[in-house]
Image 1 (tube, rainbow, N blue to C red):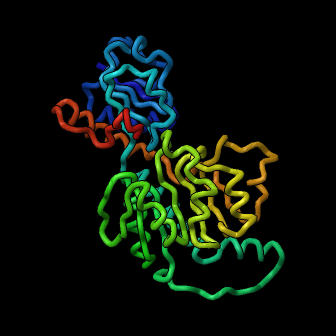
Image 2 (cartoon, rainbow, N blue to C red; image 1 turned 180 degrees about the horizontal axis):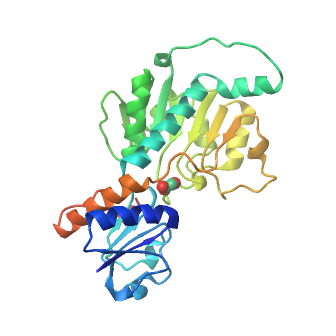
Image 3 (cartoon, helix red, strand yellow; image 1 turned 90 degrees about the horizontal axis):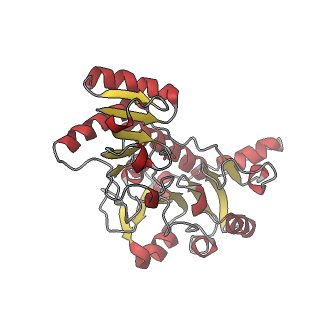
Length: 308
Ligand code: GLV
């Protein structure tokens, strides 16, 4: 019986050490050294190989090596194959750091100070307490909830929106299309942590931006195709959005002449908001294998119809 890892091989070797220690009976193999394909029961991959079902006829679980599963073509996967996304403390911690940094940067006018520095300008804006700033997070999965807990600790006035109803301590929760306008109307800094699905493709568009209070900030840490790029440029030009921090784009990287690169009101980072951490991730996957063998629900199990 074997477990195949098909992602960054350097990190794969760290997984291998943990598996060797904690699950010595399970052969751990790093792609392309897959051994006997009929022995492969589990696969952790960023992008699964083509014709997965034919290649690994006895595959029992597919793990995404990242938080997202939008890179999987569900139609090409064996129909009943359980798919699990990465919910692990390392990736959550990284996202909490990035979202905190970005929200604090917007709240404390850091993009403005970057522009001023480029002009050798020394000019102070008033410092407003976090409690006067209303932050809203789109997406209340494990990443969104953890980010909100940290934002709350700074004192921000926090709300969250998700498709289905959630309850998060100290956070005003909005649900569904009906409650989206009220959520947007109160949100001065909007953080997108939605998964990419057919419903969220193009979600961040001019109609949405126009419902935010004028001069809002945007933090995009979801997926590139959720943002309508021309609409962001228009919203920035009109001042609906004052500044934006973008960690994901479409495509990645953007072409060299793309207007986002040089835009004074956009701070771009190269999809580094968070990354799976091998030591914590391997342990979460091992725990999920134990759950799978015991017939228990795996953490991060994807609803394939829903897409996340
Ligand atoms: C990164 O974007 C991931 O899905 O882990």
